[in-house]
Image (cartoon, rainbow, N blue to C red; front, side, top):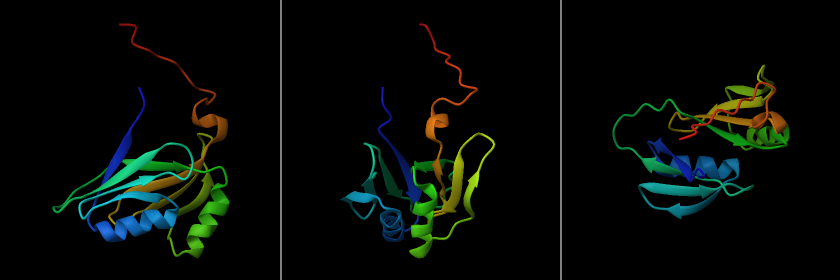
Amino acid sequence: MDLNQITLPVKDMAAAAMFYRKLGFTQIVDTPHYARFESPMGNATFSLSLELGDFSNGAIIYFEHPELDDWVDRLVEKGIQFEQMPTDQRYLWREAVLYDPSGNKIKLYWAGESRRNPPWRVEIRDDD
């Protein structure tokens, strides 16, 4: 199986769509209540869904880039604000933290080989 996409709730579709285009994603669906984006690398997509009422989203979306520090520098030049600039983490990833206009938490990161094969990796499967 493969993960199709993640859909994030947003309060203001126009502001959210512009934010994600600024991050470098290509918008491929544009309606008043739904937008979808392609990643500039790989086959990943994600979408935004307009939520008219209050919502709370505890999910964190991760976007990976091998040139993390340069990417973050370019985004800062475009006016994107970060809560945390790129920082090495104890779990072997380098991460920057920011929020989209609707308050969804985003981590921009680079993990290299540790993304899928950290030293503590296990493989547990259901053999049914």
